[in-house]
Image 1 (tube, rainbow, N blue to C red):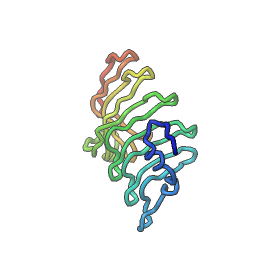
Image 2: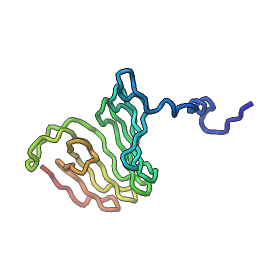
Image 3: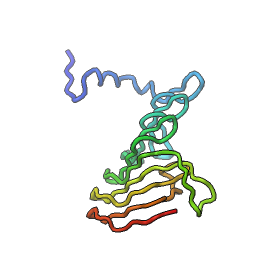
Image 4: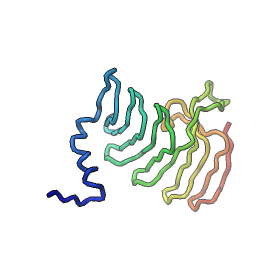
Length: 166
C-alpha cells in the first residue's frame, strides 16, 4: 500500500514520472513541440511550443537557479501579465497590456512595433514608476523607450514627478 503525504494528489505526483522523456520534443515537421528546457550560457529558459512557436507559460532562471521572470506567450507574442524578480526574489517590475505599437518617436528613425504598460517597484514593494514602454525585439531588451506620461514615486509610494516622453 502506497502512502502519499503531499499537498498534491498522488495521481499528480505519478504523472511526473517519465515526464523528462517527453521534454524537448519535435513534431512530425521537425518543429519544437510541448515543454522545452533550453539554455543560453548558464541561463535556463522553460517554454511551451506549438508548431515551433512559443505558446504558453515561459519562465527564466539565473545561473544560480533563481526565477527572474514568468509570463505567457500567445502564438509567439507576449500576453497577459509578466512578472520580473530581482536578485533577492522581490518583485522588480511587471509588464501588461501588450499590443502592437502605433506611436512614433521623433528621435527613432523607425516605428518600434511593440508596446506594453510597465510598473517598476522599489525593493520595499511600493511603486517606483509606471508608464508605456516601446521596444523592437523584446520587452526585456536594453533598447526600450518610455513613451507618453510616466509617473515616478518615492520609496514611500508618493508621486514625486510626472514626465512626458515623445
